[in-house]
Length: 156
Image 1 (tube, helix red, strand yellow):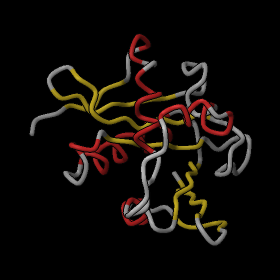
Image 2: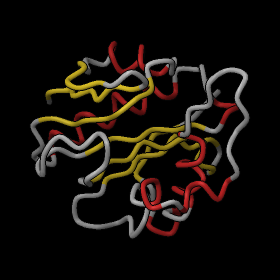
Image 3: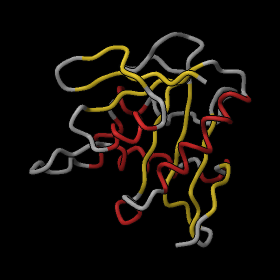
């Protein structure tokens, strides 16, 4: 499959709500929550008013259609480390998963964050999420955890 990695265009920012919903990890045997879950304050902060000075988003584009996104912003969520460390989120539409696109998005984003002057980036992931292996391969290390999830940091 041919795709390109590019900056998300401002007119595409509303798509971040779709990617946020896709980013929700659903353990095997569990039902996907209703889409309205993304409007809860603890999730909405990932995409509300996206496009601020510290916000960065790249997309994987297949024939002009974004099929995956990786975005970062400084926000106070579970994965918050400090005011100088952006939080990273990544999602792909289901039919584009397990094809290496997420890894390519990650490899494109890390240098962008470094160029933006950041020394590290954080994320949180449920321990059962298969994406955790990708984060570890990309150099993220666990800095804090609870029984279900962990906060990981990658030095830039």
